[in-house]
Image 1 (cartoon, helix red, strand yellow):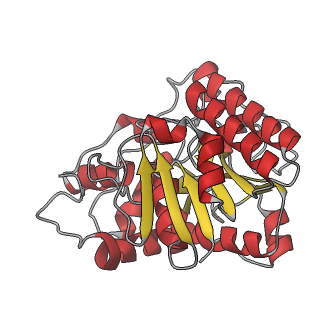
Image 2 (image 1 turned 135 degrees about the vertical axis):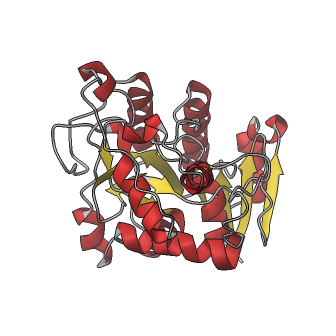
Length: 311
């Protein structure tokens, strides 16, 4: 099998991509800490591994590399570390090292680099988020395009189960709160997006690899929702009797609405659909896959027990 390196395998995107690609590649996941255990995947972790990128690539000689370390989780997840200075610098170094060795490089970027007033953003949209994180990720995208014109950059909004046994994931915590009838104020924050489950995203990304696509593309779900709508659809899919209170956003200032993940970041996917002749999944399709995974892949849903794998 050809070797695929996934950098940032400790993220939701990285771990679920590793699982999705494990049947068609020899997958090697790389992370600094909290390494997950994924069947049929080789995991390397520790600062010594991630700090010697050139040597790592020379030793492993991958066919391609996916970098999910800088934007490997939903911008709506309050616990996620997205777009930190260290992460983006490592991603920039990865892109440069891959370009020097002519290794196809794919950067997973975030939809939250964009903001309103447009309802759906094309790849050429200039309505960019002015937050520090948003600007940092945009600068990373520009660096990748400059050092490696053959790279593939994908903006998206990913969600999925947390593969780590040490941490509780955002989706798991949300379902646990719903089962207990709780309402989290963070769910009513402003902002719209087009979420897609990682496994469906992986299927489309695999097609992009087959077609040798390069440049900037949007891959996202077919439906535009806000946080509370997403939570309600999740509860409905898992047959949880929870509706949540109505959203009252009058207290959010303009500055808060311009913060990372709180703007209008829904993605227009016409370009990728035209290139690959594929349809983007609806939110119902993505949450159905999530539900199926909970029953047959990760763990059975038990109303008497927390859904967290870390519990």
